[in-house]
Picture 1 (cartoon, helix red, strand yellow):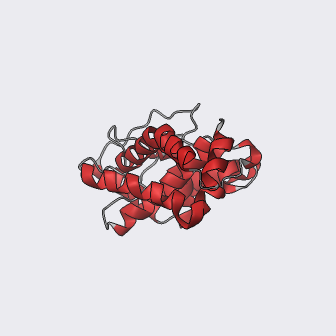
Picture 2 (picture 1 turned 90 degrees about the vertical axis):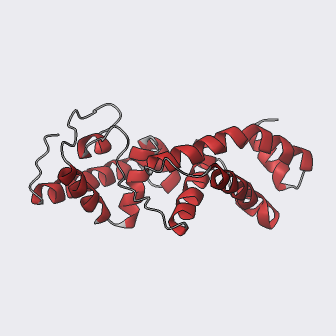
Length: 202
């Protein structure tokens, strides 16, 4: 059966369908969890906690008579994998926040990407790299000053690498609105960064 049929069968309480669902999506869910944890700069996350988080996501999907799973509709052509990735991102981020670990959304990745590279589109990559710890701290501070929704946008676009089209679908807004929001976020961060005496050439 295809993904919509499988989800529908699970939502009806079909045990065989649920077993198939778990087998089919376990690896995908686990990889999403790991990518989110690593994007936060956490490289010593206990495997036991990863396994616990993995199990809790399946509990989330199945509890209350599969209420969360039933919420998937495939609206606007969004695939189930895209929808599932969003569920895992939200749940994992909430889990990490409750764990009281330093998982700020502005965490730089292992290669020390700059503001320009974090905010560049997939096509227009900036070659500017953060050169000092002071500049890195300035970037972190500027992102922390953004509204929570804008930090979430950065999480989706630059850490989880959602396309702008996928973000539009997930947030239920137009592609034009996504482009405008990205432009606004870039402008605010550039302004903040420049006020701190750090000039970046985009």
